[in-house]
Structure formats: structure tokens, C-alpha cells
Length: 371
Image (cartoon, rainbow, N blue to C red; front, side, top):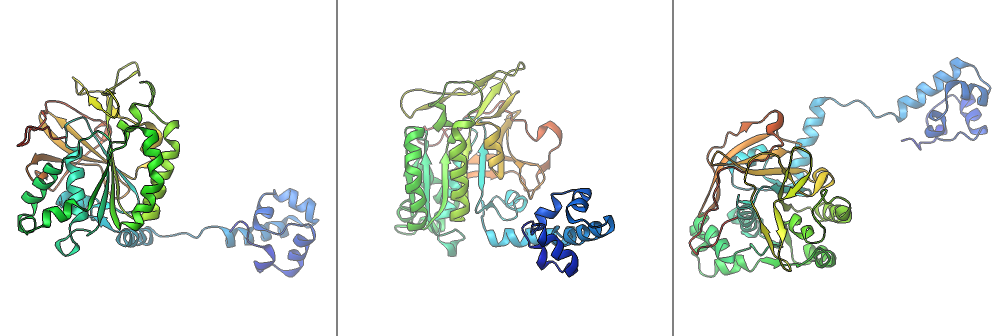
């Protein structure tokens, strides 16, 4: 609107001609000058200048909108954008339908808390045929830490949807829709991003999971301040992927400990090529999300998985459509299960705090740890 032409604004022809003669052709040109500068330049009186500026400002200024209209626009936008339902009732209600399309959703938490479990369940839901309540598409799963387990995936599916998974060939069909990529370095991941963008269209991909972004960059840099600048390009590219593809993109993030003097100690270290071994913090205070403030601003939804006094909680710590809420949950053979759907509203420092106290890794039937 700032570049709207003055001669198209309905000003009196006499004053409009003076503006044109002085080469003041757009609203930006006029509003960039003070009243007294315009008086001198146009050689007209103060009342005429004020009248002209008021008229120009009224035309180019954004119009007021009511809170009701903004709310209706938000609801319409959310409905048109679409969601991947998590089938966790309380969480889906809080997020107005589930994991939203077209934006980044982040899962943050310590090792063994359930981030990968959640990603496996989302992958099943995205690959499940539409008439069974899924998205009926394929999934690209970036498995950085080699935590993806096909056996666990099938177990979650069989326990969650026994009527479907016991059909002949169904388990193999759904597992075949999940494409797993295991980059061993950030540079290898970077090289694959353009091909991932092409695959999102060619393979009818309905979900992209990166598990985990923090592990990708931990081997590239020495421990120190959170990785911000090296991830700048990746943040922009992944956000553009979400907007371009209009699918949900879920990224897991680790935690680091922060001492009282502000120094950082990361709770994971690289051991060998592509191997990440986490060392869970021995206390439950001063834990913060890794990757830094630039990454935090890039994500639209942040879900924090934590453990406090032996109970696991899933917190909606950041969302434009929900208050901060915490849901107690367990991990069972069918995946994550909320203990209640009401959620507890959070206030103050509880919103951003991350606890890791008194939780033990759950052992599944084949002796592997569930993360």
C-alpha cells in the first residue's frame, strides 16, 4: 500500500497536480516527509498539507479488524491447513486437530523419554489408509541415531490396530510406505535435502520426521554455545519444505544441562561415525533445549517430554493456538498413552523448564530400549 500512487487516491486535482509536479508520486514519498518539509516543497499552507496527509494515511493504513473476525480467520486457516491426528485426545483438542500441516513441530526431551516412540506412532498414522483414519501416504524418516525399529513399529501397529494389522499383507504394506534415511553427518544430510524435496512430491509423502536434528550437528562442532549460525541455512530450508509441501514436519531435539554460571554441558556426545550416545543428566534442574534460540523461533509447535518424580509428562510448551498444558503419559506396547485428556495448565517457569527425574528406560520384548 505504501507504493500506491497519489493520483489514484482521489485527492483534489489541484493538490494532486502539485504533488506530481514536485515528483512526489507515491504514499511512501509523501509520508516520508514532515508537514513543514511538505509545506516548503509544495508551497502550500499547513491546513492543506494536513488534509492531504490525513487522506493519504486513511487510504494506505491497514484497516481495523475485530477480535471475532481474527478468530474466525484463524479457525478457517487451521481447517484449510489440515492436521495429522495423534489419536491422543487431549493433545489433539489442544492443537485443534493434531500435528499441523505446513509448519515445524518439535519434540524436546531427555534420552529414553519417548520421542522416538511418538515419531513411530505418527509414522504409522501418516501411512495408514485414509478410510482407516490415516493420511494414506508415505513417510520419510531421517533416522540419525539408528533408533528406528521396524519390529517396534509393527508392534505398535498390531497393538493399536489389531483388526487392520492382522489382515494378510497389511503390516508389510504399511512398513513399505515408510522410507528410512540414515545420514552419518550434517554434510551428508545437507546433500540429501534437495532430493528429499523432490521425493515429497513424487512419492506422495505425507510426513517428514527428523530424529534428531541435534544429533546431526553434535558431531560437527565442539561443545560450547548452542549451534545457531551453522543451522541458519537448514532452518530456512526445512521451514520452506513445510510451507512448500503442506505436510507436517516433526523434528526431535535433545536437552543440555546449564550450570548456574551459564556454562553449558551437553547431555550427548558423538562416539564414532554416526553414533550418538546420550548421558542422561543426573539431576532434574537447569535443563534446556539444545540447538539454540534461532531454532526455537523457527518451530511453531514445541512439545516437551519430561519426567518428574517418576511420572512422564508431555507439555505443549509453545503453540499459537493453545495455552501451555501438561498431560501425564505412559509408554505401552501400543505406544504413548495419555493418562487423562484434560491437561494441567502451566504458568511461570514451569512452561519452559525441562525435568529428567526418576524415569527409567522402558525395556521392550526383544530387550531393546525404548526412546
